[in-house]
View (cartoon, rainbow, N blue to C red):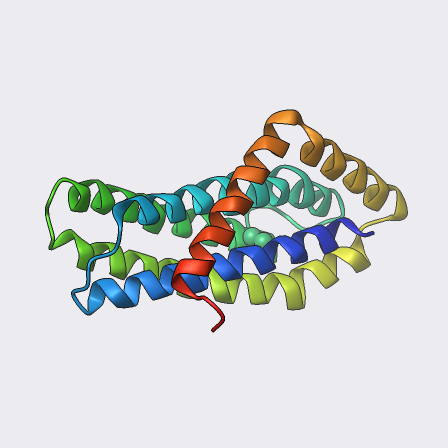
Length: 186
Ligand SMILES: [Fe+2]
Ligand SMILES: [Fe+2]
């Protein structure tokens, strides 16, 4: 299986979490309470699965391979993807800070959490679309057979590290639990 197919599959999980987070955001905007532990779990998933696990594979493995194939890191499609990862981190940081205030009893922080979640989900959704529709097909075409094989081996190594496996299992459990609570069978 191509390395980019792993990334497309991970996008599906990230998109489920975006739907959960948007539901949380909607409830907060309506002035409803959302369990702070659930908000923290959503952030944990985003920081550890979407960012550390998925974006790290793109930034540390796929993008350097693309650079070797002639796509510079500082501009063009790879540059845009990197800038969007950074923009997303900013929203997640702001949401995490607001969650700490919300937990400490500042109810007005709910709207700040909601706004940052909305911005993050909107950004990530179109980012994922661009990667699925344009960047990954471009990588599949541009990377040599050898590069594809090397990427496959590096991805498998990253996925099989014991701490990655443990963290993956915990994050999948969070995803399924929150999905049940916030999306149900919708
Ligand atoms: Fe990305
Ligand atoms: Fe991605």
